[in-house]
Image (cartoon, rainbow, N blue to C red; front, side):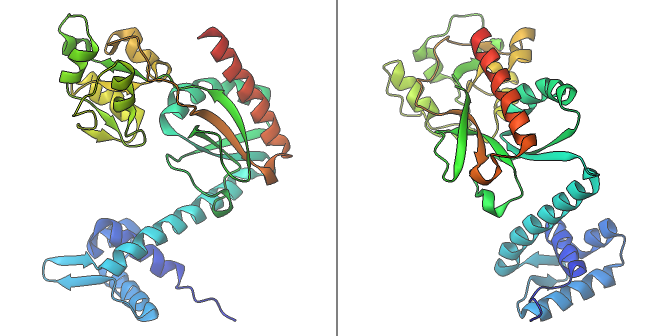
Length: 299
């Protein structure tokens, strides 16, 4: 039986139109006429029996159904593109698709990855950002480097390192004066969306109950927190190993050398059980665990 799937051309036109909220800009991106994009969208709506856009003299606006469908279509097109590029670039070589937490990847993993490439030139490592848990069965990832408790069903978890969040800020924010927990409590607090209770845990460890411990700009990545802290927007809780450059050049300082208490969560390499015998993955796992052990012993 024929699959109930719209044409790829229609989905691509819809994704671009939804992203731009404009048929004209979608047409420019896709090197099509506006009329061609309109026909693709109209055909898709007829196929689905659902209105995806509301048209007006001022332009187009996604309907509620169109908004929900756009998110799903974009994710599927991204997956098809990633798989296509992986196949085109494989050329018979071994490759690994890794999901990684972004700042850990850019600040710790990537500076070391050239050594793995030197030792294993036959293995190509592809990195994709993922900040939230996911199901390996729903993706093409071979493994993930993530922050959590190591309990991920159907996987083997290999401990890499603890996080040790420290309060850091621009030295200008302290004005040359020593910091205390009481003083930090009065400064703007930068929050991380994936660790919403970090400041509460830190203040509690200092014997303080701070009413505004969850108040402040909420950012998703440590790299965003670091930039905000550098520009004197507030104090952030960041692992020092992710901001070595900023600490070295003095644009950030550790306000107090007291980390958030260890809560059992850490960075792990997580491998699906069905992938544990992969030769490329074994080589990467052994190398990564060696690098992590060396880091722990010298830090």
